[in-house]
Image (cartoon, rainbow, N blue to C red; front, side, top):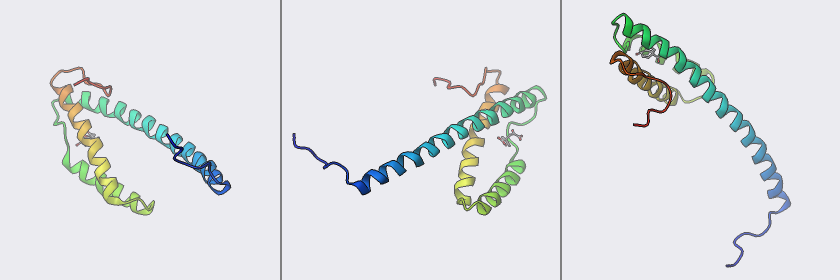
Length: 116
Ligand SMILES: O=C(O)C(=O)C[C@]1(C(=O)O)C=C[C@@H](O)C=C1
């Protein structure tokens, strides 16, 4: 087989060095996001148990509307696409509601993979 790529030029070597540095920062931020999400799910687990114990509904659409409005505003201020922020929040909340329902059904709901 013939070699596909010539060895990198000096310009490319510098670019690859920079790419590695930026990827290091991205990896740190991805790790932080996972830790923050895990912490959020620990709190929503407690909410789910409280709701199930006191026979409260798993979802609260009015609360969600306020959360969406707040996060859209924060996203705008941070120059993040508010549509993306809303979609992300809705994605997380849908999972939380799924967990709440499982807790209410008496299942051992956890934030860990269910294997389903
Ligand atoms: O605050 C609640 O009542 C929750 O159950 C938590 C949460 C959320 O993940 O933020 C999830 C579901 C509700 O519809 C609203 C908010």
